[in-house]
Length: 131
Figure (tube, rainbow, N blue to C red):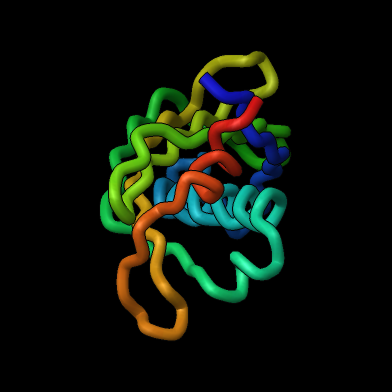
C-alpha cells in the first residue's frame, strides 16, 4: 500500500447535528476535501489545468461518532486504477486512533475542456501510488 496522504480535521459547530455528533453529510464533504487536497499536493500545475475529477460512487462505513473540537486524522490513498476510474480509500480516525469512518470513492478523471473521461496515464497513476 502506498503511504497515505494525511490531513487534520477539526469539527466545528456547523458540522454537528441534532444528535450531538458530526453529521454524515459532513464526512462526505471531508472525503471530497481530502481528495482535492491530495490532488493539489501531488499533481503538476499542467495536470491540474487539464484534468478534473468527478465522483461516480461512494461507499462509506460509519464506525463511531466524532464530536465538536476533536482533532481527527484523515488518511487517503489510491487503488485499482482502470481506464478513467480510480478508487480512493479514506480512513478518518479520532484522537484515540479509533476508526470513525472508512470510505471507498470511485473517481473518474475528466478532460476539463472536453468534459469527457480521459484515460489515466501511467505517470498520473504514479502520483498516487508512490511511497
